[in-house]
Image (cartoon, rainbow, N blue to C red):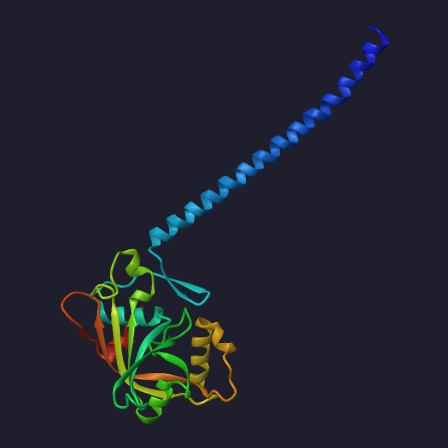
Length: 244
C-alpha cells in the first residue's frame, strides 16, 4: 500500500466514528421526540377517559373552572337542591322594585353567589352587593327576595343535550329575606372566604364610596324543578340536612 493510500485509509477511519456518532445523535433525538409525542397523546387520552368515566361536571366563573361530580338522582330532591346551589356561581335575584317607573313591580338581576368554598358547602347563599345597585336599594326597603339557580350554568345539561327549560335540567327557587352580615363576625369571614375563593376578582372591586357588604339569604321556602310532574317543595330542614 502506498503512502497516499495509507493516509486516505487513516482519514476514513478517523471520520467514520464521527459520522456514526452524528447519525446516532440524530437517531436518539428523533426517538426522544416521538416518545414525547406519544406520551402526550397517551396523557390526553387518559385524562379524557378519566373525565368520561367519572362523569365530571364543570362550572366556570371568570377564569376559574371547578370540577364537580355528576348530580344526585332526581328523586333525591333535597340533595339535588343542595348540589345545584353549591355548584352554582351565580343566580337570578328578584326583588320588589323601589325605582320609578317600575316601583312595586318584581325586578330581576344577576347576582354572583357562593354557599361556601368548593370543599365546604353550607347551603346558605352568600353574596357581595353594593347599596348603589338597584337590588341593593330595593332590599333596604323590603328585604324579601327570590333566587333562581339553574343547572344550565354548568356543562351538564349541554352534555346530555337538555335545554335550560327542560325540567330535567334542574332549577332551584329559593325565597326568603336578605340579611346584611356584620363585619368582624365569624359568619362574615366565612362569607368572604366563600365568595372570594370562588370569585377572586371581587377582591379588586372598589371599596371606597361603593358600600360593598356581605349578605346572606335566610331561606323560607324551597322549590325544586328537576323532573317531569311539576315543582316539588323541599322543607328547609331537609335541605340543610341533605348530604352532597
